[in-house]
Image (cartoon, rainbow, N blue to C red; front, side, top):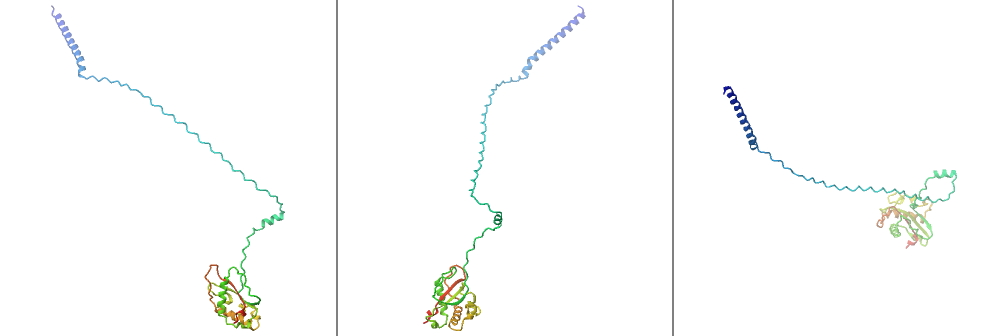
Length: 245
């Protein structure tokens, strides 16, 4: 054979052998590669059952607010009783408008007695006990204290109807108010009614000595205070002729 033909055959056989080797190597790699690299685990499929959310109960509708109570207007007061009146004249209307409202009358005050000594004829009648005066029993005790200091011969008036009257204002400390106070200046004209007109005699001397006894008996002994206020009124009346021995 021609040597050139032999060379071409050898070259072709070489390439063919090389191609077969490459092909075998590729096949081997294809079979070995899966063993070299672990296969990824197959994904597990999970069936998820979707449970529907329970339906929420529908809240009941809000109750409607109660209707506001209707305001009942109070019944109008009954009209005042109409009384027939005469229409006042214009002058009377003006005077009525200017007339002040009447004020209550003040309580009558007890007339204060004027302290003094006097004489009269008649019976010895005790006046009604006035408000603010001492009790009659207390007045009798006061009279006894004065008579104990009285130096007068009453025999000259025995059987006489002459009454000696003494109007006194006595203080809480047992002293007398006015000109008959134990420390007042001696002034018979201020203490004895009508003294300047009295003639000298038994009556004038009786009044002078009784005034002196009133001053000497002070302070008088009084009953316990009853809280009625001071000074107190006192009227002593007696017949000097009844004291004669």
